[in-house]
Length: 323
Ligand SMILES: NC(=O)c1ccc[n+]([C@@H]2O[C@H](COP(=O)([O-])OP(=O)(O)OC[C@H]3O[C@@H](n4cnc5c(N)ncnc54)[C@H](OP(=O)(O)O)[C@@H]3O)[C@@H](O)[C@H]2O)c1
Image (cartoon, rainbow, N blue to C red; front, side, top):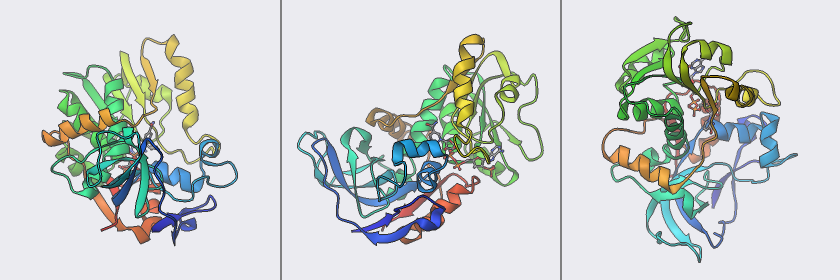
């Protein structure tokens, strides 16, 4: 089968189009014929091996898994012996191992049926970013009638977070650069702050919750824009320096500080599950959330797709279409 391979860490150019054996599903896994694969910053981290902390999970000296990619949408081609509820021919989406290939394996618990109205490309845009946004809004608590700010609102996670918070009754302020203002408004944001012109975190802004997906602003700066009992959900944000942790140190500091504060600081680690995919499908089928695919690349152009997302300024989602 065709596959996007890497045998060393480095810039996206280390990726090459090659061939690999079709993987065999274990007892609790499913083999998926991949029709589209999502690209997110996590893939960029695995390709570059940065920050170095990533290598603890993905191979210290070289990548442990030669085939890249996690998000996928496609058709079930085979099921392991212990898999129930999925059958050959079912259209599914979720996360697996090595989705930048014609076939990938996925644990059955991380797959769900394709939301009815979505193309494979749209469905491949949902799993990681959608589930992360869902977890972020949940971590913010009951947002109904509350003022929620989403930093990085025009990105993969941010675009979902704006829509999910709106669906739950929040008053949403979306923070993005000038070129994405119309886009985030179209997602339902009540207010838009262009961070290139206005400081989105002025003292006394008193947001009930801030969902931070970008910019790596300091905890002090973010906290001053929160109400005294507000919640800060730290999703991520690419730092330009610090190759060991690259911004992850902020999550660790939040963990240490939070018990001493009235404000709640939540360093988010999103998990993947069928239940959350099903919750997202309900929102999508109800028309309250829509995945937005901004750029589609061919499988052969995976390196360009990863570089695009790695720029840190992608709009909504980027996917690979395998036809
Ligand atoms: N904690 C978890 O479990 C988890 C899970 C998934 C992802 N993440 C992390 O979450 C972060 C966001 O992921 P993503 O998929 O949404 O990334 P993305 O698609 O690249 O979006 C990031 C957005 O940030 C905006 N941005 C860049 N610099 C900014 C700044 N200084 N201030 C405000 N906005 C800025 C960019 O738009 P502009 O053009 O407007 O700048 C871009 O749209 C990444 O760091 C990712 O690694 C964490």
